[in-house]
Image 1 (cartoon, rainbow, N blue to C red):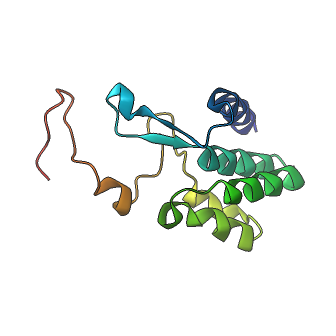
Image 2 (cartoon, one colour):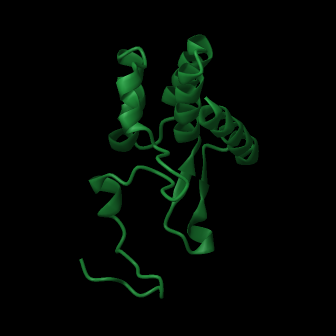
Image 3 (cartoon, rainbow, N blue to C red):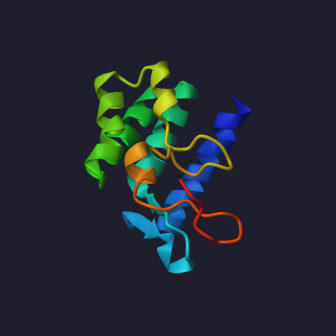
Length: 124
């Protein structure tokens, strides 16, 4: 349970730092990444559900659905709501680990060239 409680605290902090914005665009910092509020709400909702707080979790999923920006990427939110947020939906979570910020689906990955640690574009 400790991991979900810690994750929940991190998602709460993230929403605070979003300051009501729908996303933060990190491209200004040289990173080809946007952090969407719907992804944070989705993950926070899953944490609530795993912590046996299904009402709060489903509420976050509903809010996340209203905040969706990219339908082909964020449709997983509606799928979770339709499935009543069953446990198996965690395989679709946007946040997978501390190292991977979002689930990089083919549609997202194909937009940007891969870069090596030196900043040079790596061959595909």
